[in-house]
Length: 272
Ligand SMILES: Nc1ncnc2c1ncn2[C@@H]1O[C@H](COP(=O)(O)OP(=O)(O)OP(=O)(O)O)[C@@H](O)[C@H]1O
Ligand SMILES: [Mg+2]
Image 1 (cartoon, rainbow, N blue to C red):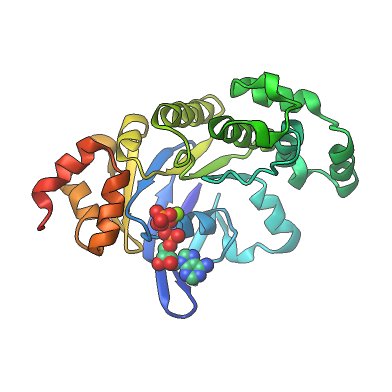
Image 2 (image 1 turned 30 degrees about the horizontal axis):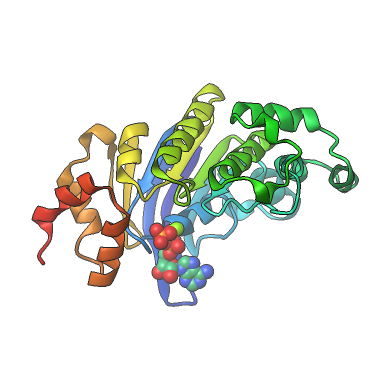
């Protein structure tokens, strides 16, 4: 699905967010990306969903060189990639049905998109998507009245309506409680399995990554620290990933967000 060769992303001619990164992701693979804040995870995802171009290196999507995409071609390729964000980017004042159907906007002609805003033209499609995520009864609710976890489900339903080949989920569960987080990650895994979609997920929770993904990639300072089957990732790999390059304040922030089991496993490697 993706072949990245020596990819770099430099912002403002000085911030190197991603450096000389080589990566292959197979069609239908499920991969979790973990790593400290500022490691370059979101930047990598923005290149993978073709929102920003690499500064150098080559990025092939389904064998096609991203440098050759522009205009209509770019829009067509982007439609094959669905992204879900931590803050889910829904329009709060709209009914759930409109937010779900906005997943189709990229593939509808303008007249149809406008018509759908006045009167949802494919409410059945939205209902089916909401059924998949377990909130079919919310079809005509105003989105802002839903809980954080329910809104994240609406974002997933929007993804289902879009029906992309690749799902990029950037910290999709950071704003929901741990029990809901596991449910949402599981839902995305199930959807990718059932519909043979490639799934890449950025996660702050190492435990969730271990529990649900066969392949784990550790990203640190814009480079790959490890890329291994989950079973082969050791405490040493994790400690090397999270400890060392951070200031004390950032380290503390990471550990305050981490599960107690992970903090314990890092303790022997900490110097202070
Ligand atoms: N648009 C931008 N302009 C300038 N610098 C940026 C931009 N986007 C990201 N960066 C920088 O690139 C680096 C990587 O940021 P990125 O958001 O990719 O990290 P991350 O791994 O997603 O972190 P987090 O876990 O906190 O979400 C950081 O130093 C960040 O400040
Ligand atoms: Mg990020």
